[in-house]
Amino acid sequence: MNALVPARLGAADLVRVGGAGLRTRPMRAFLSALGIAIGIAAMVAVVGVSTSSRADLERTLEALGTNLLTAGPGNDLFGAPATLPTESVAMVERIGPVTDVSATGRVADARVYRSDQIPEVETNGLLALATRLDLLSTVGATVARGTWLNEATSRYPAVVLGSAAAQRLGIGTAGEDVRVLVGDEWFTVVGILAPVPLAPELDVAALIGWPAAESYVDFDGLPTTIYTRARESAVPAVRDVLAATANPEAPSEVKVSRPSDALAAKQAADRAFTGLLLGLGAVALLVGGVGVANTMVISVLERRAEIGLRRSLGATRGQVRVQFLAESLLLSLLGGAGGVAVGTAVTAAYATTQGWPTVVPVWAMGGGLAATLFIGAVAGLYPAVRAARLSPTEALAAP
Image 1 (tube, rainbow, N blue to C red):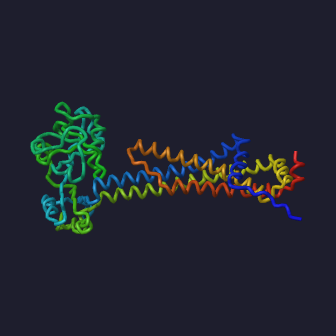
Image 2: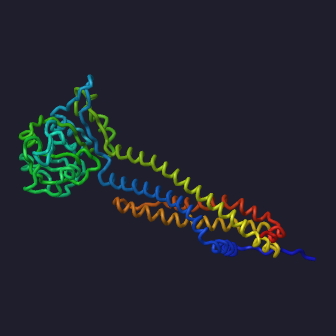
Image 3: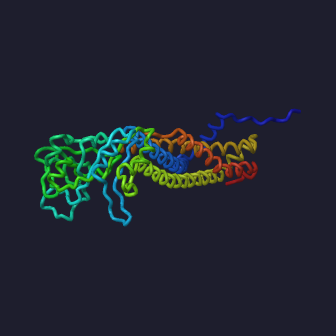
């Protein structure tokens, strides 16, 4: 006599049986999946926003270049502020791999005001800088409104405001009727710059021509920042000799920096913050997994009669176990897919408002779904084993 062989459950059967268990309790299933979705959405959004931010930085550096170096005065041996010699710009120009050089000089005693009725102590943190005409091309800056200084306007009381300086002064346009007070002289605003990522000090500055600064605001003619562009391959070599070239008598009193390094350091700090947010997302995902486990345990308790009926009709322990495990995986997968969709949408919305490219790594979406399946398997394992251990008579006798 041949032994009875239990029917096998195919993949489609498992999905159908698992889905039937979820459809009978839609609100509970939705709330459990929501916990998973929140955790996955948080993790995908954090990775997506961080990646989009890095993509924007890379795009910015690609447009502006990473070959900009700056040199400025530091301190002498006694801690007093040092100065650069007047011929330092000309000497830096002689460095072979250098392609562009420009400079600004701070006018220490000149403050910038919108009106002569404003108290002197309310400086708004603005600087008055004498500048060379080739500054824009060297630092990669652009004029948002008006025009840049030229050979004529650089000799007369004309000024170009940085983006933040214009905002703090309440100036939104340039023209003959727009003036600001620099020191004791009125200067006509001929232009307003767009933000300068590689030279943020220019954003809070009022830029006037080098000759005009010497004539109208008692500028001493000494440069305080030298901006240097070099061939990309020669940037380290130029950096090594820049201090000694700018001030041969006291190279230790010269500070040399690479602005793109500051942006990269900021990005590194953002990555550390991203790690913290990912940890919070993982906690949310764990809480969602606990919710799934709780739902499945209650489901086993409520469906003991169904389990007993299936066992009495020939279902094996393994089939009952796989049924509840499939239900848990399906519940987690629904939450994970929803979380990936929400996280991607949040990333796209935030990146759009910031003007960034929207970048969500494939590994983040795939990893999110894999994490949900793992959580679902772990959360459903105990309830599935518990359901499989119920005997048919005990299950059918349950109220």
